[in-house]
Length: 440
Image 1 (cartoon, rainbow, N blue to C red):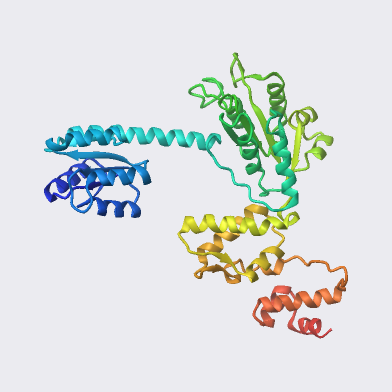
Image 2: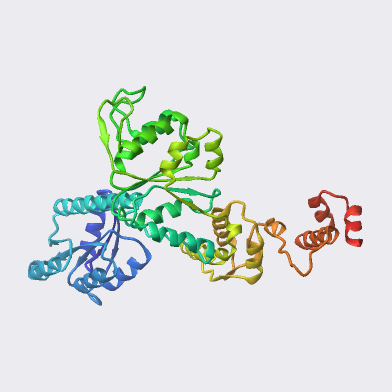
C-alpha cells in the first residue's frame, strides 16, 4: 500500500515515515492538509494518516474532502488527548480509525494490516465481478443500420433464456456482443464465464469445461471445478465452438440437454443451470452438412442466431469507433489528442479492414502513441493504409481497366511523394513500364 502522512511536527512525521518504511510500506509525508490534497492528485494512495491540528488545512477538513472526492482511501486520524472526541466523530463519519500521541507503532501496524486485508478482499471481489460481467459496463459503439438491427434483436431476447449462436469474421466484436447479451438478461447478476475452444487440447478443454476429480489423469493432484459449475446460474460463452473436438461435442450436447454432467474421472452427477452463448468465424452450417460439426448440437446452440457483419459492411460505424478508441487510448497514454484530421478520416473510411474492429483499434492505438500534435494525421497511420483503399463505384462514370490502372499508379506515386523509382518497385514493374502506364 501507498501511505501518505500529513503531520506538521517534523519529529512525529519522520518517526512515522521511517517506522512504516521499515515495515515494508511505501510512505510519503507532507506538513498540512493542503499539501496532502495536492499530493493525492498526483499519486494514488490507499491510506492517509493525518493529524487533526495542522496549519492551512487541518485533518478534519482534509478528511471531509477525501470522503467526498476519494472515498476509496482509508483515513486514520492522529489525535492528542484533547481531540479524541473529534477523532471519534470523524470515525462515525467514515474515517477508518484513529491513533493517539505518543504513537504505539505496533498498534498502528495492526490497524494497517487490517486495512490492507480489507483492500485486498475488495480487489478480489471486483476482479471476480469483472470476470463474471457483474459490474462491467459493456460499450458497443455503432451508428450503422446493420448493428441497430442486432441491438434490436438483443433487446427482444433480453427477457428470454435461450441459447445464442453468434457468427461473424474474426475481430468483428462477437465477444462484446456476448457480454452485452448477458448484461441485459435476467442472469446479469450471475457469473459470465468465457473459454476459447480453439486454444486447448481435447483433454485440457474437457477438464476446463467439466472439471476433474483427483487422480483423473496425470497431474490431477486435486479435484477441480469446471467452468460449467462455476457459471451455474449465469452464462458460459464458448468462443470458436466450431473447433471443439467431436467427442467433446457429444458430451457438451448431453450436458445441455440434461442440465447435468460428470466431472472427468467422476461418478457423481453435477446439476447446473447455464445459458450457452457460442460464437464462430466459420460457416458452421456448411460444416454441419459436411459432418464436421454435430447437427443436433448446432440446433441446441442455435436457438437464436445473430450474424455480426464485418466492419467494411458497416462503414457508418468507423467514425464513432475511431472517436471511442481515440478517447480510450488518450487516457491510457496521457495524450492530449482531440480529433482525427479529415484527410486521415478519409483514409480510414476507404480502408477494407480485413481485421475488422480489432484492427481499427490497433491502428488508433498506434496513432495515439506516435502522434505529437493535437490531432491524428495521415502521418501517424500505417504507411500502407492508403494503398489499400476501396474504390467507390460511381454509377455515372465507371472507369475502364486502363483508367483504373492509371489512377491507381498515380495514387501509388503520390503515396511515395512523387518518387517514381519507389513506386515502380512497389508495383513490381520497371520504370519504363511505369512511364508507359502514365503516358497511356
